Length: 168
Image (cartoon, rainbow, N blue to C red; front, side, top):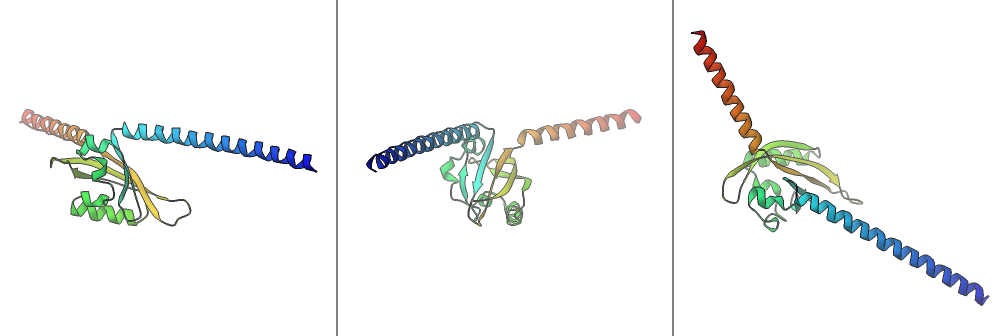
């Protein structure tokens, strides 16, 4: 009887040891994966963000400083739409409250006061075991695309003007 208990105790000890080692390995893998994700987000050329159900910023990536001149701590806890002009803030709230993905062009003010044209894209997600709908998405600087589109339009206008002059 004692040998059976001793054998069972040793067996349970090994099982617990295996479970602890496995759990530690899994946590280590999660930590490595989280570090990889943060490395990717911090080196991207867009800003990744997460909002809670009240549209307050809960996470924002470090390219915020390069694009808009703000440190992450300056935006955390604040509503994302508070950084938009009034019309775009209403459009953001309407899109976010719909519970549907959204994407629209807008602009944020750089910390130095200069407007920065961006594409604001977001999609809802639900937190596991909660009914709260939150959002995550990106802010992408589109100033280069707008500049190129403007130059293209100017060239097209010059070509039309030249064609009119040649036809006279």
